[in-house]
Image 1 (cartoon, rainbow over the protein chains, first blue to last red):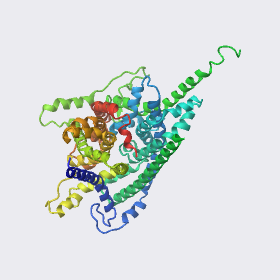
Image 2: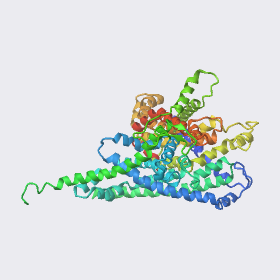
Image 3: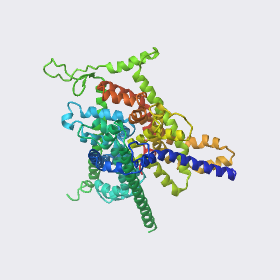
Image 4: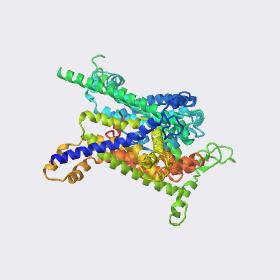
Length: 281
Length: 332
């Protein structure tokens, strides 16, 4: 290949990357820009102001929805990490036995199953005449259970890949030295797979915070999560207040992702250095 | 007694026994959870799809329910399935040839499959070269580039769809219309929102990361020496791509396509916000039958048919993508 062709190709690659990133970010950028409008229209910049941020701060309904979403998200993410990690251990460590095919299918299916179907099936569960007294019908608990089921699938995939790539020798050595299996898991396995657990928790938290379909189908009047409220408002006329909300979310998420990324990279580097030092003796 | 042959033996069997018991408890948590919150709900969907709609709470009569007249419950209860919901779908299939038939469910199924297939294709066409270029960029920048793909995925999905409502707005204040009018390319605003095209753009936009990540995970492992060898032996770039890159990245393509196609078929939010009344899709049919129409048996029957339609892609996903090398990269 001639040099000109290589150069041309490199510029082609850059152009394509730039184009797709523009496709991904221009809509978000528009949301941010028009959140500073002083007017009432969401797509016109009629002077600059922060009035919609002020409106956001005094919106009690929105505040309640945000608080509920944060609570459900944290609880669902925590439960999802527990259930998902247990599922991952079963899938990655236990000898396949009867029903393990069914188990593997069930563990990943919520990830791809259309949300409307999962939502409908869970509504039928929670409103079933015989189960309703036990499970408590629709409401916050139902949304929590639904989010846990969905997120546990993601967590189990993340943790599984970590379990498979970790060095089994560590666990085996501890077992050979007479350490009981549960202790091996908590003292050896958990610290090694910790990055996957943290990543899984964060992923589960965002998925739960972001989910509309399950939350809407399973909500009762007292359990309006943020996406359910936003969806209702999108149907009742658009206001730049939603842009302001989007801007806040984008800023918070960007900072969180940057920090998480930095922390994880540093931890990885430190672990690699420690391993290196240990191997050299 | 201490010299008996049994004395040293008891130690080894203790651990397997303990392990077995521990294993049972570890496995029982996810098993119980999935049986209760995944499998049982599916059994209930099938059951409700065979029920009769009713004006009650919940709005159906189970095929297992006892007739009111009989006093004492019988065990096992009689099973009287009502195939009415499936018959409505079957009637539409029979009506297929008749001109002017309404066919709301069949059309919704067709639209959903078509739009999901188009979304998958667009995501693949945009995402494959994109993932390739990320995988081939310098090691230090790769992480940043990937994070930039993930970032929109972490921000609110609803609000990203909302952003497209502003961009595509069909009035003069729509952002794309504003730009085109200002540039003098058009005289009157275009009808961009509330049609299938808007839904397609929204779905490609929302699902693109799900295509890019499995593809990237696959392409980054590709041995570049194979392509160099092909080039040295005189293969044209296209030949090298078709005979080396494409077959080697097949798993990534399958995993990414399934990650996009399956949820896209059942998508509800995007057609609802960007499609307007004209774009019938199956996720919306289920939603409408479940919500405003209060016809839960019909919603359940449609859901059952949808899962049956998707069972093949789901199996393919489970075999090729569900094992962590593709979908697992969805994390940070």
